[in-house]
Image (tube, rainbow, N blue to C red):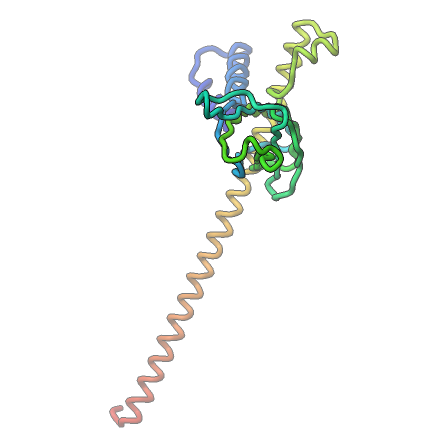
Length: 235
């Protein structure tokens, strides 16, 4: 969807040829950015889940850190190492693709194999950490999807890439991510079309069934009235 918006914006711009292509590509890369950071609060036995729409064969990295509420200071302090977080990820078919216990601060990674809405859930191991019992926990969560999950500084150092080579690699991976996003939007559109056609077909058959029932009831009523009048010798 982001790519389609990019095309709509680029269309009216002046110029042609390579300049237009470059501007279109830059806009597409801007709109294709995925990921976001947030924080939330959870209680002792509370479980928080998030829905992330992810194309297939896309890597997702989540970084989190926890803070425990200090009642004496009335503020959140960094959680001790004894506190852990359990992370569970389910794909659109409700299959568990990640279920693992982490520490008070950590990073989880998974790769999607089915396009659609993935459910990411987190909850604490409060039963193992009595000091947290009855308290509140603040969790800072940063989820990066696709090529935004890559650490290009580490990639450049590992593969000994120049600045130009690294930038080209970034652009290639961003274009690949855009293609995945477009394929995902086509898949969603196809599913929506199939659902619409199925609903329309059911409505049509239901209308036909209602018409047949009404005709049958009308015929029965006419025959019943005819028999009644004949019995009363009115006709």
